[in-house]
Structure formats: C-alpha cells, structure tokens
Amino acid sequence: MRRTARVYLNDLNVGKSKIVREFLGQCHDVMQYFVDLFWQRQDFSGKLADLPTVHRAKKKFGITTRLGQALAKQASECVFSQHKKDRKRKPQLKWHTVTLFYHFATIEPFEKKGFDWCVKLIGSGAPKLVIPLKSTSVINQRLAQGWQLSKTIRMGLKKGRLWIDLIFEKVRPPLRTSGQVVGMDSNYKNGVVFSDSQVVGEDIYQRIQGFQKRQKHTHAEIKSMLGQVLKKVDWSSIKILSIEDLKKVKQGKRGTFSHPNELKPPRLSLICSCGVLSDSNA
Image (tube, rainbow, N blue to C red; front, side, top):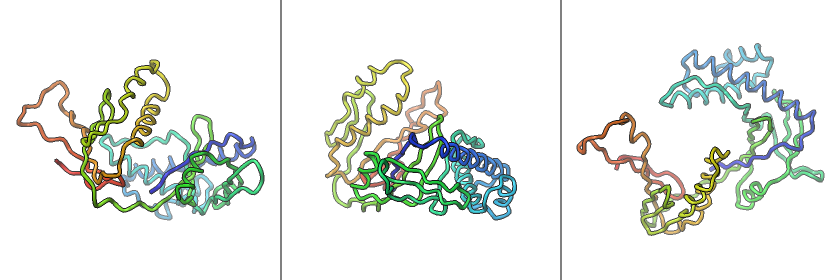
C-alpha cells in the first residue's frame, strides 16, 4: 500500500526556488516531447523507451541518459493511461510534476534546528541541492502508524507553488476470511446506508446546502466530509462490502426509456475492507 504526504516549499529561498522551477520546467518539456513522440508512433505499451529514443531527447535538451530514461518512462505511462480511456486524446501536460527515484534524490533527517527533514537532490541529471522540510501532522501520523518512508519522491509546481510529496509504504494486510457480506448505498440526502443497519453522514446534505454558489473547492470539501464519516463505520464484522456500480448505466439512453426486457442488472463491485476482491456482473 502507498500513501503520500504533501509538503509545500514555502520556506525555500529565492535562489533554490529558481533552480527547482527551472528543473521542473525542463522535465515538463522533455516529458511532453516524449508524449508527442510515443503518440505519433502509436506506442501505447507503457514500457521503457529504447536507448536511441532516449538519446534523441538527450541531444535535444542536454539532459543525462538516466534522467531521460526516467522521464521517458513517466511519459510512456501517461500515454498508456490516456489510451485506455474511451476518449483517446493525446495528453497535454498541464502541471509541472516529476517523480524522482533514489538515483536523483535522498531523504534524510535534518540535523540543524528549524526543520525536520531534508531532500537532497544528488545529481544524475537533477541539480545538486538540499531542500529542508518541516514535518506535518500527516507525516507524523504515518510514521506513528508504522508506515515506511519510500526512497522515491514526487516534486511539482502548481499554481505558482512548489511542493514535494513524500511517499509512504506499508505491507497490505491479508483479506478477511470471516465476517458478513454487507451492501452499501450512497444517498445524496440520506447519507451512506449499510445493509447491517449502519447509517453515517446524514448531516452532509444540510452542510452542502449551506455552501455558497460557485464556492471554490466544493468537490474537495465533499470528498473530505465523506472520508470523515466513513471513519465512523464499524468495519470489525464486515468481510465483503458490496457496492452498486452505476457508471455508464445511462450511456446511449439519453432521451429514451429502456423496455423492461432490455434492462440489465447493475454491476456489483465486491470490495473487502482491505482491498478489492472481484468485480463481476450480479
């Protein structure tokens, strides 16, 4: 299992900020170059690029082979993911985001006062730089719960703000073999209702009604509220959670009504509290 904790680099000095922004801009341009190249070639495999392809970018942008391989891999995965969608359009990278493996960066405790961690960019195509970080409640909580800090980080620039995602890893617990199968229905007005008589989130509808029109981050707030209420559910006796999948249920039905004989049963996703078990027609 993986989780992330984002830290904004608000305390980074002007000189280091400029270096990081220039590096992210270069990575963005290189990845978009690879995206265009893979899309033109109709290469949707998601696999590693061959060395001749990497060397083309190395010559064009003046990067190292190792950085070129890493950026080509991320671009290839982006193209692969986009091609799996129904609307197959060439990706246009909007944000400046790059994943840096241990070849490019290390994470260490910060020895001086004022900061808790530091990310060291160690070269191999990345600038040699030390970026100090202050710990957050999310980072402290992850470490207290037994999560291990990964050697990989994600760095990005969004709406003018620099950030780093620390990635935490933990072994997935085994799926439960005992307990009951419980159905769940998410209702906009009545909350989340379970077949074992549990109901949570009944007050969400009233809270949403209090939102101002065109309020920013509305969807993010609703998602956060749902996450908070789901923590109130008693999962101790649940082995499998069955959720109705209504995706594309009305596809091709706009303005029409299906004949009763043509109606198909909804798909049910059988989900254990620890992970997905199966996804099949009911």
